[in-house]
Length: 397
Image 1 (cartoon, rainbow, N blue to C red):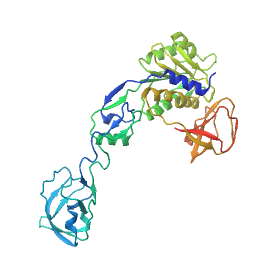
Image 2 (cartoon, rainbow, N blue to C red):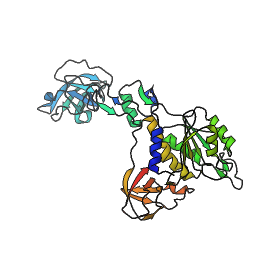
Image 3 (cartoon, one colour):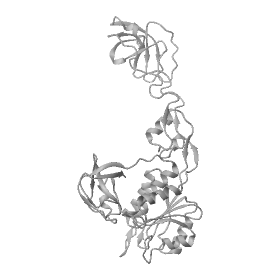
Image 4 (cartoon, one colour):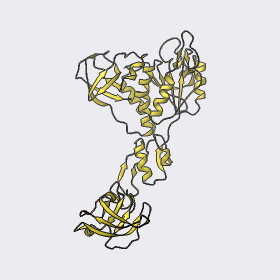
């Protein structure tokens, strides 16, 4: 049995970076940038007004109050053409600034004289207006050539807004590996409309894994059925087709009905490791299939499966896609906690400031504590009787 750090190093050693593809920015949400984004233009691309009001030369407001004729009107999307003169131009938010105007006064700060049809013909400026007032300068937000987003960044709605504002037609992202999920066990029922017989349980593993992967920007397909023997499991792997990553839950330990190791042997898979010094999830298995696909056999208890995804599968996916993954947050224990020495423990926990509270109900079958947890406390293998204030890592869900 190897340590968690050793297992993680083996996962890293096996990883191979995914190829790139160019897609439209609108389709990039949740995807991972393969190449850094540098601004192709400035934002805003031209000086424009931040207010509905009147654009003028600041010098024409000196000696206020002063009355100026309204010599033009521009809305967003118009191109200013009025020649320079002593006067004010009616202007709407976002409209380009005439090149001879150097300030804007909001409409609510002037007295407007209007013609019978409502068109302004003159304005009274009540106080002197400083140069630059209410003008958004070209490049004030983003400068052309500015480095914006690094490779390995997962695209968020905020990043997407910048990409589209730049007018990019294509963005280079890493391809997403196809993922297949296999839930094992004749006792597992997938259809919630089906009544349970004695000894049966509803499947929570594959819905959780699929949803957690989706939250991180990955799509996973759940294979039909719940194989409960070697032949059925091999059929499920075959049905996974060209999946780059196959994740199973259950039947991976050392019991007489734990058929996953035998199935992998028959398939000719290369087992990278089986069992790690962790809790929960010690029986976890990692292998490469003959076609190069990655295989994770996660234990069947739901929290063990969740830990396997967070601390083994996700690190692989991050490396495959070139994700710049954040390391665990340094924190300290809020209260004393005892654990088994020699095992890295991933505990359901809450984080308040830098204080980590390990929750009651750490058994791997107990899902309810996840409802109040913020993530996982990472308790080091060397620790046993831990005290309040001892350093730990924290990884949010």
